[in-house]
Length: 121
Image (cartoon, rainbow, N blue to C red):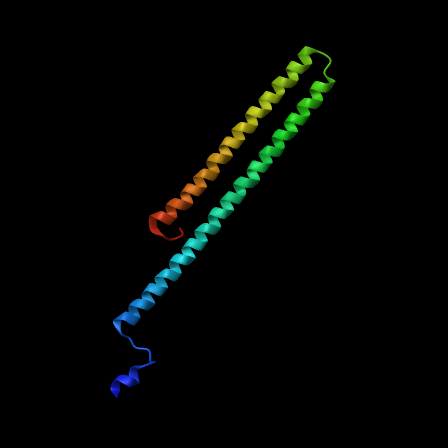
């Protein structure tokens, strides 16, 4: 009869305590994973904004060059427009390279923190 009294009542058996510990650990891990995913999504969204910004800037450079060439009266005018376009393109590529490196560094830092200790720093 004493056995029936335990049915349906919580006990502090080692298995119950262990199950609670496992549930707590799993909850923390899921929360950590969600935080890392949110951080990585933010980094990827910033990379996307940077990419679109550079794309639009490159389109503007090309459009400006086309306008300048269409009104140019001589080969030296076209050459000057070309030199200016190339100079601005190199600046754009330099900024784009720095942006890609910064975004990659941020992604790697997030991954390293997560893999390193499983917790958000």
